[in-house]
Amino acid sequence: MDNRTEVREFLVSRRAKISPEQAGLPAGTNRRVPGLRRSEVAALAGMSIEYYSKLERGALAGASPAVLNAIARALQLDDAERAHLFDLARAADGSTALMRPRRRAARQWSVRPSLQWALDAVTQGPAFVRNGRMDLLAANQLGRAFYAEVYAQPQRPANLARHTFLDERAHRFYPEWDVAADVCVAILRTEAGRDPHDKDLHDLVGELSTRSDEFRKRWGAHNVRHHGTGAKNFRHHIVGDLTLAYEGLEMVAEPGLTFTIYTAEPASPSEDALRLLASWAASQETNTEAQNAFTE
Image (cartoon, rainbow, N blue to C red):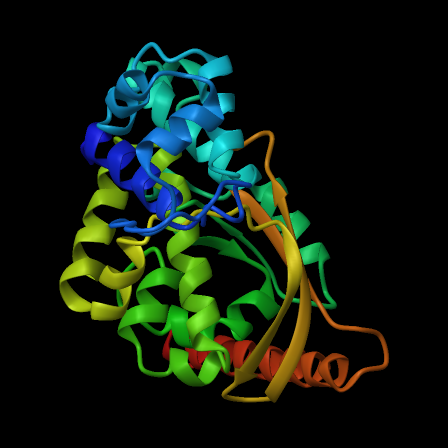
């Protein structure tokens, strides 16, 4: 991904989202661009229009933290957008590899026994490990049952983004599909800023952009987000509707990976549905073991 293009499109898209009124400026007349003008962002950031224009054209290399923070304030960036801007600046400096520990490619990664034990110790809800490309790298029994349709796809590792945009069943699994799709793309866009040289991510984005108009539209919006906690609605093909809370934990021992746990409110219909799903998952595993034993 070309850094200068990424910087330019990100800053232009953020500038277009802020009205003069939101920035405390008079709206005026004869405005030919949505949102703020470059000159207005420059004034709000306390720099010359020439310098800001240079930065917006993609020349972030050498920009100081003070300059980046001034732009973030002027554009009213949230925490995820601000972090993305700094990631783009590090990539422009060529310092991305020095700022973060090197990550293994998904195809070279294997789950440590102790990590699988930790996943299996979670028995009341789906638990799984994913990377920033939305690959499902490891899961407990409930996690595998919860994402059974994702694991049913032939590609490995199983990928949530590919499922969301290329599998029609995702529209049932996510009753609020538009929201789920927005979140999915924002996570991928955030990862692209953190690791712009990830070939597997490039390949995934290229595949989804070619095969899905919905993905391509969202990718061009340059939205990013931190995805750490919240609640989601699902419609599982076995147990029906669930509302689950989630907590995403960044793994210190595995930079770039997230350990996520879904849980249901105690004594709720969703908790009953998870118990039913656990029973179904156990029966499926028993049947598989019996079949394997019969064929040996």
